[in-house]
Length: 264
Image 1 (tube, rainbow, N blue to C red):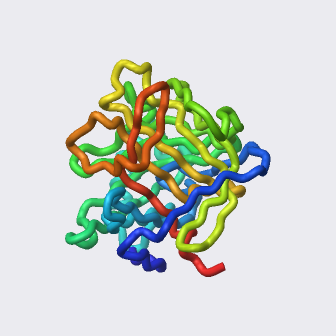
Image 2 (cartoon, helix red, strand yellow):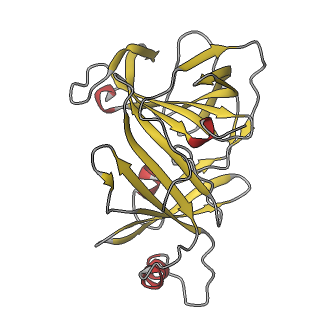
């Protein structure tokens, strides 16, 4: 799988500017933060950039549907049917998504991540995750929903654009104002979104926070990934921070969609 987008080796300048536009509900058909719509033939790519020096650390490409020359597809499908307790004539209502990663200094990694997912009018649903040597882990297995589960497509305004951020653990995405996002000088009208899943306040050291900027058509343009300021095992940009539930979260890395670099 070759990308048709050449990501810059250094993160372009990012500016996030508040606007007086009204925050609106949006429909996001993606497996959010995987940045791909679970439909046959869909393709998506995005880049991860270090928070401190802005260097490119990885590129992720995701493609949905059968891939030419995949010798293991038939055996994977058979094992998926067994895992989902389906008969040979029962339809597989979803699509397999292959995700490959390029890592700085290493090139394309040999491992391939795979999920089986489904798009419904209301949700993008993770149905199963494939690991070589283990097989399929599905929604029928205990705790699957805690790790994967369903992603609600509709995102409603639920948080103010300014002021303290209060989050819980409902698992929903909440809109938090309308912004102009400038990436490398290109302007995008976006809605800011937070995932309402920072936990119950007792495990902030382990909590991660995602701040996303989604276009009006519901696609993730930029996501900023934060962790608690007390973490010491990762390099953090302590100059970019958010206060959530009275706790300080600092920037860990940025994720920029290929859409930010496509010609208009």
